[in-house]
Image (cartoon, rainbow, N blue to C red; front, side):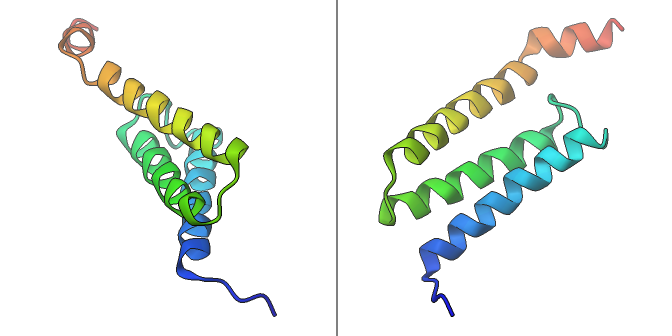
Length: 90
């Protein structure tokens, strides 16, 4: 049996968050702009990054860093006053 440390469990949990967010998107239960979709992605990427600080893999670390940056950008873009104004006009 494979023994997993706390950092591997964090990485596993992060993967579940990201896969669940993708599932919600594909089934139409969330949209790319939904806060739930974005927060699930952000939490998942953060947990995976923490895991990668201990069990380092350069390719995986880079993708998680970009995932976090892009998710934060999307969250800020979707919460901007301009977006809120446009939604009121619809």
